[in-house]
Image (cartoon, rainbow, N blue to C red; front, side, top):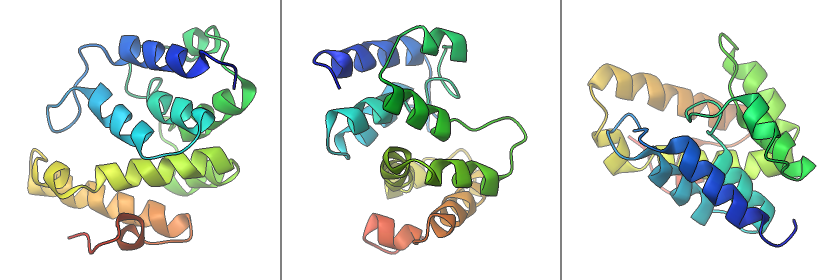
Length: 154
């Protein structure tokens, strides 16, 4: 990755997530920053900060492509972007095709499964649904949520 690309990724993410909140009511960019800090290497960090810009941010695919990120970053962000109505198995199969996307997805799951984040879910049904999704995603990636988090996830 060229010098300055990671900084550019952070700026694009900050713009895309501006005024967006996550399910817990926290600024969405905070989740992306935590995921970014959980991976090594500039490409992985760029993908991590950008991993939800199309799905949860205020940026279109076309706008994202217009930012001219390196191809491995674009491919991994694309792999991590859920499509409307897409089965989880198809999404995880796409993620599995990119080592970079897998590394970021594991960090994303680890952050999503933080106790404080789960406890802050708006209701028990949402918490249970998302936790089941996180567990299934981990299984499809060939691991477990407990293994990813290094603890039992309740």
